[in-house]
Image 1: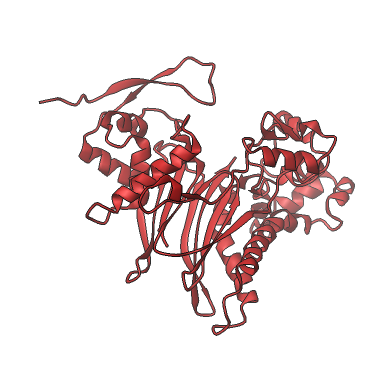
Image 2 (image 1 turned 180 degrees about the vertical axis):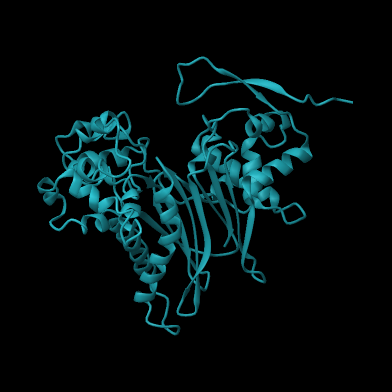
Length: 416
C-alpha cells in the first residue's frame, strides 16, 4: 500500500521574477477525495438554472488557491427582466491594480445594459430588436458605463481638466476626499474607480434563446465547443485585445501617429497589457487628470516615479479603448458557451490557442457521456490543473506561499 507523505517540496519559478532562482516551497500531497473537497472549497462552484425543462443553466467557479490573497476576478450570472421578458446576462471580469473597479463593473454593468434594453424595447409585446440593433445597444451601454467613471469626477470640477490648473492641491483634496461631509465619501469612492481597471467579457441571450451576443474588452476567452469535441466545429468568439494581436497594436499606433511609445514592449504606453478595458482613467484622460486629481486622492502617491514613466508618454489620450468587439450568433441545437478569464488560458502556457480550445471542448464533450450532474466549470478547472495527476494538482492548490503563484481563474460554462 502506497503511503502519501504529509508534506513534500517543489521548486517554483515566479513569472514576475524570471531571473531569480526558483523557490523551494512546501506543498501537501492530497488524496483524490481531499483534492475534490479542497477544489470545491476554493472554487465555490455554483449552478444557476434559468429554465429547467429546456436545460438552460450556467455552471460557474471563481478560483484562487492562495488564501492570503483576494481575487480580482468577478463573474455575473443572472437574468434581466425587460418588460416581463427574461434576457440572460453572463460575464467574467478580470480586474487589475485593485478590485474597486471590477466590483463596481460586475454590479452595475448588468443594470446599465437592462436600462438600455428597456429604452429600446417599447413594451412586453414589442418584437425583439434585430441583431445589429442589439449589438449597438450592448456596445453603447458598455461605452456609456465606462465614460461615466471619469465623467462623474470631471463633473465635480466645472471646466473639466483645463480648470484643474487654476485649483490648488488643497482645493482638489477637499473635493475628492470628502470623508467628513454629508456625502459620506461619495466623491472619494467615485474617484477610486479611476485608479483601477478591468477587462470585460459578457454574453447576452434573448428571451426566445434564438440569439447570442458576446461583447469583449481585453483578453478573456469566449468559446462554443463542438458538441462532439471535433475541432472543426469549435467556435472561438473573440479576439484578444493585447500585445499579441498585431491588429490592436496597429490600431493604437494609427490613432497616435508620431508616438512610437504609444505601444512599447507589447504594452500600452509600455505599462499595461490589455488594449481595451473598463476604467484605467490614467490611460484615457490627459496626464493632468492623474497628476492633479488622482495624486491628491487619499492617501496620495508617495512615489510618483512609476506613474511618471508612462504619464510622460501620455500626449493624445485615450490610449486604451472602451469600445467592445461585439459578435452575434444564431443559436441552433443545444450547445455550451465557455467564458473564462485569462487565468484559465495561462494554465496552458506554451499550448497553441487552437489546441487549448480543442482540449476544453473534449473535456466538455466527455462530460456529456458521463452520468451525474457534475459542475462543468469545475470539471474544466480540474482538467486544466492536471486532471488525474494528483501530485501535480496537489502542488497547484496547496503551495505554502503568501503571494499568488497562479492567476485568478474564473469560468462560466453556460448551456444555451
